[in-house]
Image (cartoon, rainbow, N blue to C red; front, side):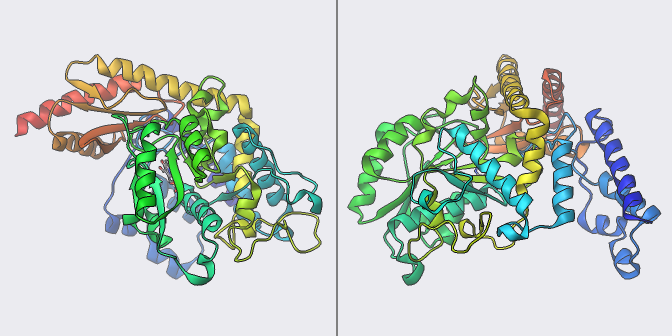
Length: 477
Ligand SMILES: Cc1ncc(COP(=O)(O)O)c(C=O)c1O
């Protein structure tokens, strides 16, 4: 069978999958034990005989799709992973098919130019200057923004800290960690920050946690206390990391005041906006990131609140020179050292072979338009507040914080263990897929309302189930 007939068959199967997922006809989640699944999917037999095409491919795909978690299902409420718009998936297909690793321009001019364009579009949303498209030498030392798309927000955070470290301790490239480096962050930062501290040899003991309020947001007036401690202990602050928004409960740190502090003390400010920077698309919600333009770097995932398939994260810098020199032992402000019509991203990234991540992003953006994406973000944020207003009035229910984004944490009266048991039961039944988090020492059930098909009725049915399950669990004790 030809590529075209196989592809048509695959697309038809995906279309059916989309329709039945949206209609909520199949379980949102279906946890088959790994060993059984390896057998059911006939993996060894295909590997031995080859020929996965036509009827065999169709059979395989049917079984594969049956064992997926259905993100297009309205009851998918668990994680911050985008419910992908199909145009983004087509972008991933085109990128996989053409396979242009575009970190150097000559290996993929179309993919590179899209990444360049997308980075500029994002820079402008932050309020930073875009990079010039005519790459003339005289532009190189000017202060304009720059960035790169990476395979995920965790890698973006790591890359940002490499750049920040390079600024204060460039000798590290040659001599190794000087041993006096520190990071400042709120305790509620994403775990990729702790991993970054480990990977860079800064070490977890050199993360200084700044004071936060009851919602987990940084208290700007108290940063100085911790900063003084860093200094008194003979350390140098590589960066202060702020959340926009936090992973657990979706709360934004006050960037304006934090930015003022960092400016006054010459500390690199990195905003982890992996999830919540997309609020910048909305006139209504961009105030949540007021002051973001004071940051030195920002992580912003498109595969979270921008409906782009995994993975596609943007790492953006107010000054392109901070990233253009990050991977160099000696500072060089040159964009590129060879005559060419385009731009190489390879100097800005840990990766060597890098997928053309911009295409999946561009295709969603060009399909929904920036207005359409803004409306999507607004809809999800508004629904989350409605859900909060509904849940907090239900007898026996409480919420961790008033949501600022599309993340909502709640619990029903009872132990932490009860919350976990309720979640397990929902997953075993396949009716709802939600997550949990520990916040201020208490276990909460957690919703990330990502799906444009989810509505208040979905949330009401979920609460009904939570009540029923609580009753059943109580009766069985
Ligand atoms: C605030 C924050 N930063 C970073 C990450 C990591 O991003 P990724 O999953 O793209 O590596 C997440 C993921 O949930 C996040 O919420």
